[in-house]
Image (cartoon, rainbow, N blue to C red; front, side):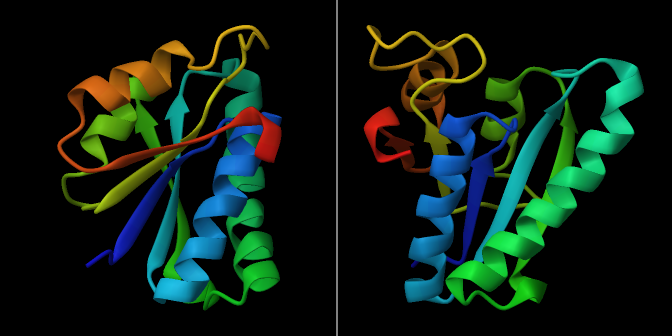
Length: 136
């Protein structure tokens, strides 16, 4: 049973597509969604703004998809995106499923998986869904 979905979120179109996919699933399963942001993706001066934006994205998407806003939250984690998402399977998130877009900041249309989604697929202890770019 899926109780919590962790979504890698860095503000890119791929991450937004993954978040929308996860919120759609969460609405059907009545489970929680945690948007996970790896700190350090943005410059220090932009981090506080990025965290505020992340919180707003969680609330907006929850309402759009009919997910109880108390079941949607954000989590900022230290380190690289892959490590942050691998740790999402552990408390305090304890995700049962991890969702990512197929490409992040350095995306290339010719490659189906980015380094983060590939590493997650290889090393994750919980199922990983990679949302294809064409669904964004």
